[in-house]
Length: 172
Ligand SMILES: CC(C)(COP(=O)(O)OP(=O)(O)OC[C@H]1O[C@@H](n2cnc3c(N)ncnc32)[C@H](O)[C@@H]1OP(=O)(O)O)[C@@H](O)C(=O)NCCC(=O)NCCS
Image (tube, rainbow, N blue to C red; front, side, top):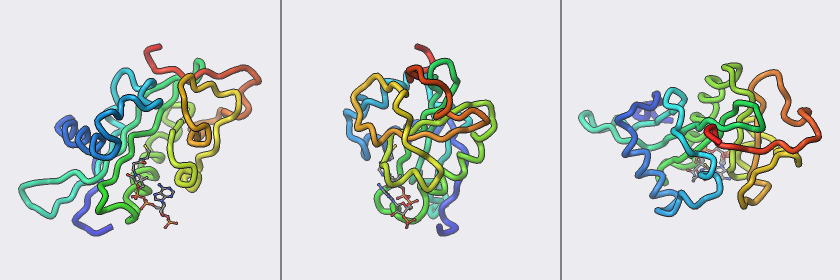
């Protein structure tokens, strides 16, 4: 990634630009997607990451963003990764990978149990994500192979129990 692109933490002033990128990538009806049923409160500000284009001295342009939302898997405090968005003209240059690997360093062993993502089945395994176990209950329509997870501390989602593990928003 060229030096003109900078990775930094999300700031409240980025809200509108990030929202605009999400609309451009996923469309105005993005909230209808299954995954948004679990994003009821707010993304976790301190886990948000931004890549900005600093080419224009007085106008920083946001070109990629990653957010995390708090959820619960049964009683276990967990994270939902996304949205992850990279501007079209910068796709395929490693920016998405940089955002994921940098954020995984922040969230591993920081008190959260598991991280879920609804994303491309071919994209996330290289970061350690695996298909969710059959007893995970995602109570909303989804292509099941999109659902992937990573353990963030000592608990292993696959070994938790034979009982159903419902996914809930943090305020359900
Ligand atoms: C998915 C996305 C975030 C990837 O970001 P990116 O910066 O283009 O990805 P990278 O450059 O880091 O990709 C690195 C690798 O992943 C592969 N890859 C990229 N997009 C992929 C996809 N959709 N499916 C499978 N593999 C993908 C690349 O080919 C590359 O492979 P390589 O390392 O073997 O060369 C980006 O394409 C995007 O914004 N997509 C639309 C929004 C979206 O689907 N977000 C994810 C769900 S929240």
